[in-house]
Image 1 (cartoon, rainbow, N blue to C red):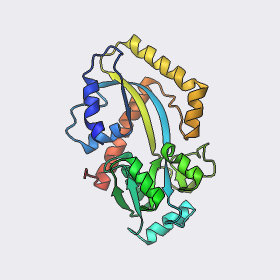
Image 2: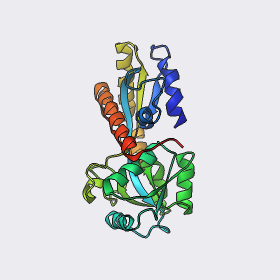
Image 3: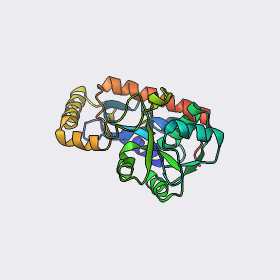
Image 4: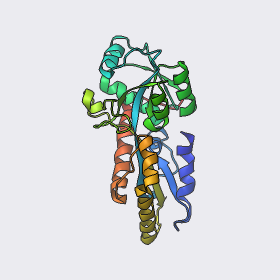
Length: 255
């Protein structure tokens, strides 16, 4: 998560003229609880503009290493065999890691965490069979789920994803609080004029409404974030608090 530590600090100091914007993601809401001495504040140093995309996390397994094809059976198995299975992540403190920790907390299970240097290497090792499972963003796993190289057991949240209608959602299997998304948003430096903000927000809205972008989003199981700037700001604040609680409960630390 190094970029979550220093890149926003540079953007926060940019001229607030609308020519320099900051595109961030869920890991920037996690960073405050993993880096207590950050030199920027995602809630105070930026103006929230738009939630650009919301991609649900998905529980995926290597079908050759994990025989369970049903999430309820899988949960029962890991409860009976704590520590036998492992999951790969993009690294300590990433959304992949903490999605796994939240899953363990809510299902009262223990699955060994294997941190990688990035989601790509972790996903490749899952496909190769070097790790058992991942808690991944649906966008990066979608093609591999469709090819059968990995199997999706559950998507997070309260509804099934249109791109994978046969995969149950968390609420269906007794995990109504398991809502984890890989989201992406846009901010401007604090002090950016209101009229400039409004113009940027409108252009982002138009882009999100285009058929081309809708098709790309849908193929990856993503949704355009239809939130007003104040709603997006409230969403980010809630994410900061939520992930701080998960970090505290799990004892997650940078490795």
